[in-house]
Amino acid sequence: MSAASPPVKNRQLFIDGQWCDSASGKRLAVENPATEETIAEVSSGTRADCARAVAAAAEAMKSWMKSTPYDRAKVLKKTADLMRERADALARTMTMEQGKPVPEAKAEILHSADTFEWFAEEGKRAYGQVIPPTNPAKRHLTLKHPVGVVGAIGPWNFPVTLQARKIAPALAAGCTIVCKPASQTPLSLIGVFECLIDAGLPKGVANLVIGPAGEIADEFMGNEAVRKISFTGSTAVGKHLMRQAADHVKRLSLELGGHAPFVVFPDADPEVVAKAAVLGKFRNNGQVCISPSRFFVHADVRKRFTEVAVEEAKKLKLGNGLDDGVVVGPMFERKAMENTAALIQDATAKGAKCLTGGGRSKTFDKGYFFEPTVLSGLTPDAKILTEEPFAPVMPVLDFSKIDDVIAAANNTKYGLAAYVFTNDLSVAWRMAEGVEAGIIGVNDPVPATPQCPFGGMKESGMGRELAHEGLEAYLETKYVSLMLR
Image (cartoon, rainbow, N blue to C red; front, side, top):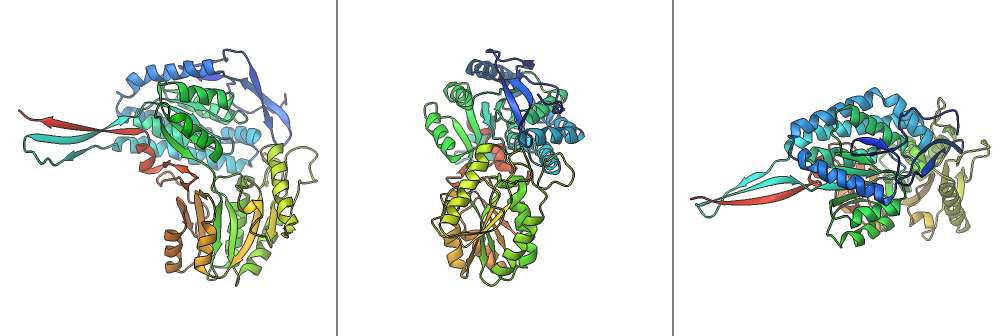
């Protein structure tokens, strides 16, 4: 194990208010993708561990759901405060296990803290309503009721943010939860659980089980005590969970794949937009569900946009995310790097031109470092235009008519996010209405914020996280009809 270990205290599962080893005694290694060194070992849970965590959550549900939203808010707000206080240490932990530069990791921690604080307040607004009756002897009203125990499955690319979007609204609504982080990136979420504990979280309300995804998911899906699954990950796994959910009619929130178009109209400043495009594309190495991945640039400004994009991509400092000035860290794992190389090879074999980058960086002896890449001249059959790339590759295409670019933007099974750059309100509105995506950023490359809904259309998922909709996802509506004497 490397002498440079992440600054979190615990390396175990958290079940029923206690840090504990797994029933099997097995442990799994956590690797730093910048050095390929093992930086920690953590307990690897089993299905039996998950069942015990679900039982603890079900027992804790009895009292947690009866607590007031104001009491629950105190825990969530204190958690947010502690995350901000510990942001530097949490960010360093995340960088070591996931690879993104420390400034990006710290921004993720602070964004997640904002999510906890926002839902602390939104939980107080889980309003019912009084409905006017047609019969004068009756009174009608609705009440909000927590859905029950939640199974939360999150990925490796945003190991804190994408769990915070599940934990905070679930707890605010009065639900209890069992969280399953990606096995490769459990440490920063352990750090968040340390904040929850220090904030006064009652035992059993939130539980953490690290381990094999299939085994733990099978327990979630087969255990009748789990009433809801919240999953962020691939579309293929989301479809599998939908099939499994049918047996117990479990409620689902699914945030799945994306293939976001980034559309630049001729009235936008190509230099300004190109700089924003490079920062948006290469953030977290393009390993972002809402990352722009198809760049449609109007023919009138394509040349200048492309020139600036290439210049800016070449300037990006690649390196270990712990080092000062690094803008692009390593990719997450070797397989991701190999998949990226295969997509580029496929595109260039079909006629695309690589303007910069194109392969694994030769600067580093170890680590999964891939050069930021810009492609042009792509043909429609290039795999990178149809498969979710999750890679540091910017494919630039051109267009001339708005109807054509709307059709091209929608020519995918995904519909999570889209980006439009224009100063023409009519064009912006037509794009917002015409593009099939759950999130539209108009002159905004970073639209996610706790108070606004986040989710996709088509095969990008179902349901919404964040905002009022994110709270509703953890609530049932009860209708009460009262006959007066």
